[in-house]
Structures are given as structure tokens and as C-alpha cells.
Image 1 (spheres, helix red, strand yellow):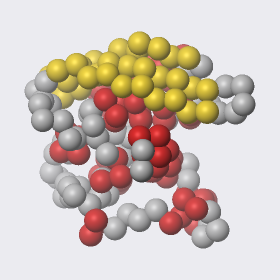
Image 2 (cartoon, one colour):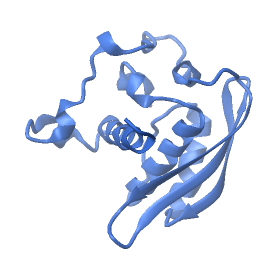
Image 3 (cartoon, rainbow, N blue to C red):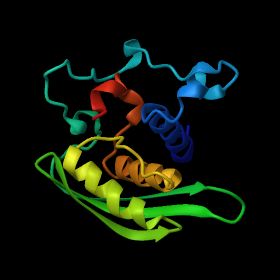
Image 4 (tube, rainbow, N blue to C red):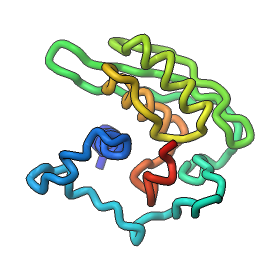
Length: 162
């Protein structure tokens, strides 16, 4: 499985986690319904109620500070491709900044709101911006790629919802 396949899977999981995929989740004919959410295959368990959530528990990085870059593209249709290139600043295991390098076809509201939501909550995924779902998911996916976070390893999406 290459990076693009993983990124598409991550987007599908974000879509399901944010509630957008609830009807698809109930539709067994939908391929997204076959995604396993079993805790048996999870490498890291979600925190118990009352425990503090640490996003970096899901990262493959071997450092807790630095600046990390990534790019992500999502084709919307034949004419539009959302492209996000960004830098994520990490200090002592906390995201302290997200700076855009390139935002081709990224909705302004998503570019403004999603980094703010990620930094404030220290969580992925966060609620997408209404009317800018693809841009929102692309920013979240690029952030996850920069921090080497495999969102498919999250055991319980409810643990990261606000």
C-alpha cells in the first residue's frame, strides 16, 4: 500500500469519524462499511474516560520537537485538485503551529479554521468546515502525514471527538 492509498483510507476514516459517513456506515453495499474498527488490531489503545488524550502516541516520529513538512493532493473532479503543502511545528509533543506552503484550491475558511482547531484541541480528526469538507480533510491528512500519524491505528474515534 503506497502513501496515496493510505491517505485515501485516512480520509475515509476521517469522514466516518466526523459523522459524515453515518448513512454509508449502515449501508453494507458501501465499501467504506468494511473498514475494521476492532481494537484487536490497534497498536495503541484509546485513552479511558478521564485520561488525557495524547495525539503523539499515534506518531511514528522519534522526536517530540521540530518542524515537519508534508504534501497531500485530493482530486475533486477532472478540473479541481485540492493540494495542500504545509509545515507543522511541534514543541515538546504539542502542535504549536501549522503554516501553509501551498494551498491550491483550498477553501479560505478551511485554511483558517482547521489549523486553529487542530492546535487548540491537539487532536485529529477535528470537525470539518461546512462547505469545505475536501479541503478540511486534506489539511488534516497533510498534518497527519507530516507528523507520521497513522490515523487507522486509532482504536476509538469517540475518544478524539470533542
